[in-house]
Every structure is written in structure tokens, then in C-alpha cells.
Amino acid sequence: MTRSAHRTRRTLQVAGVSAAALLTLSACSSSATSSDKGSSSSPKLSGTVTVFAAASLEESFEALGKTFEKQYPGTKVAFNFGGSDTLAASITGGAPADVFAAASTKTMAIVADKGDTAGTPATFVRNRLEIATLPGNPDKISSLEDLTEPGLKVVLCDRTVPCGAAAEKALDAGGLKLTPVSYEQDVKSALTKVELKEADAAVVYRTDVRAAGDKVAGVEFPESAEAVNDYPIARLKNAPNPGTAKAFIALVRSAEGQKVLSGAGFLKP
Image 1 (cartoon, helix red, strand yellow):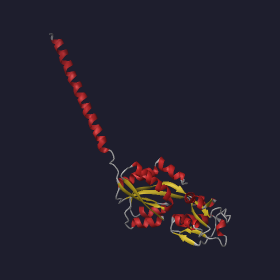
Image 2 (cartoon, rainbow, N blue to C red):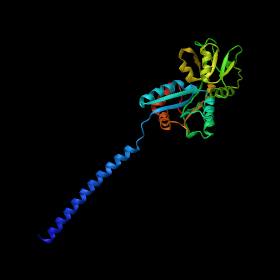
Image 3 (cartoon, one colour):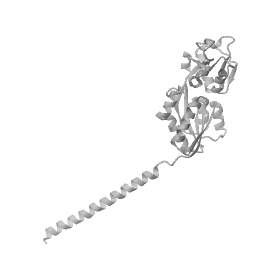
Image 4 (cartoon, rainbow, N blue to C red):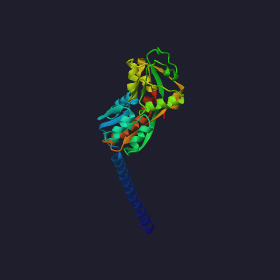
């Protein structure tokens, strides 16, 4: 064999070994990448996520809670609905919760300013006011001003509650003064007064009028545009189940969650 041929054969052998080595390294790299992806995947969600939410979110969040439990078998969503100010006070007082959804940025700030939220709260929906009257609207209420008529029994939310603060803002926008027969601690309590015929009308959210069905009639009024509430949601810093809390918030803010909320009458953020 000539020296030139021997050199050519030697070069081909080295090239073959190098190619084999590259294939081996490529396979190892692929295996490692696959392994890394597996190890970085989110852990399986389980346990209870406790959600403190404004009373006006009750129907929508209960529907989303059922959806969440179906999507993540082994989880449970526990709700505490009420006036946002009361819920905020409970959270800052140490009540264990994973998520807080408030009916106003002001009440969320009570919690955030205490350093009890994880990250920045995000607005996920908005809501506006509507007048709830007795079925058929027997008093022929057609405006916010009509609520000031003598002898009409009107209920408002307490001023410390977002729906009450919004009602006060709407009344101010219309230059109106109104003395209700009672101030209620949350919007559902105000609506119940009308449903039980203990009041002729109440200023509540449009979502609550819709949820009540034929138990009440709804009357829109232009001043409500001056008192639209932003609804923020946040995971809490000391959340007992932070992973599941994140997933629930993700559902609320997803297209699926927004569809449920829009169907209930909430406005897009």
C-alpha cells in the first residue's frame, strides 16, 4: 500500500470515530434536555385553596371553583364571601387565606399596604351600579333621583363597603341627597332587603341584579358611569397553598374565566 493511500485510510477512520462521538454526545444532550424539562415542570396541584372574595363575585367564583376542581383533581376551592372591607380586615388580622379578590382598589390597598400581598394586585374585571326594585317596578322608578321621593324605602351598602362608596359617588355626581332606611354590610344583604320586600329599592351592582333573576327588576342610571369599580385580585404573602393559589388566579384571568365573568355582567378591565 502506498503512503498516500495509507494516509487517506487513516483520515477516514478518524472521521468515522468523530462522527460516532458526535452522535453519542447529541443523544446524551437530547436525553439531558428531556430530563431537565421533566424536572422543571410544575408539581401536581392538590389541597385546598382558600379564596376571600367580594360578595358580588359569589355566583361567578363558585362556577369557576367547580371548573378549577375539575381541571385539577385533588384540589378544593373554599370561599369566604363578604364585604371587601371586612375581608381585608380579617386578612390583615391574620386570617389564613390564599387569594383575595376585592371590589375596589381601595380595599385591596388595605391589604397591600400592610405587605400582605405577594406581588402587585391585578385588576381582572370592573363593575357598575344599578337600581334593584321590586319585581315589575311598581313604584315606577326610572332614575337615581326617583329614589329621593318621600315614603320610598331605599337601602344602600355601608359607605365603608365598595358598593356603598360607589353609590355615594354616584349620588354626588347627580347632586342628590338620600337617606336610606338602612345601610348594609355587603351588596348581597342590600339586595336581599328588596327580594324579601323589606325595601322598595336598593343601589347594588348590575351583576347582582342579573344574578337575582326575576326576584327583582333592574333600572340603569347614567350617574353609574361616574362610579365604576375596578376589581383587583392577588395572591397573599402567607398563602398556605401558594401554587394552587397561582393556578386559581390564572383561571380567573384566563379567557375561560373572563367569559364566565362577562356572562355575569362584569365589564372587562
